Image (tube, rainbow, N blue to C red; front, side):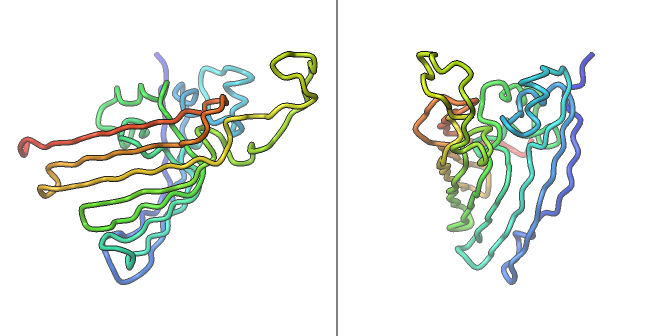
Length: 219
């Protein structure tokens, strides 16, 4: 037997169904178990995986604050700052938010977390736009432009005296849209996540996706 994930949330959700005041929220999430190896971001407790290869470990996939401004557009504007799960699709969520257990399998190859600022604008009640700036995929902003001493300056791959700690940590753009119609029975969601030059890094992935949902009946 193995422990996949033990999850704890501490959160306050902003009130997004009102239009008379600015509201705020936050989420702090902790995870412990074997699944930590798929959520790990280089530089955030990553020693457990990258140095010790522990079977079980801890991580904090979501540490963010929300600010909801209802007066912008019909659906308001949500600003999110911190570390959050990547926007595309629904598969990468932790167990409490997953529709099916097997969705967490995408931890192994999909973008999992981003760090930065993300905006979600409800242009109308049915059409949403998202735009944000992040520091790459599983790459904290404090690794941008950070360097390490090269122990082997004669190496043809890294001939200089220093090299970048994580070349994949760089300003990146995320943009998405979502259209709902037929009273929520149909939905289309397109997303481009953590788009940058694609330079090799710890886990510098660019993700493009288009997902459609259709509800057939009440069951």
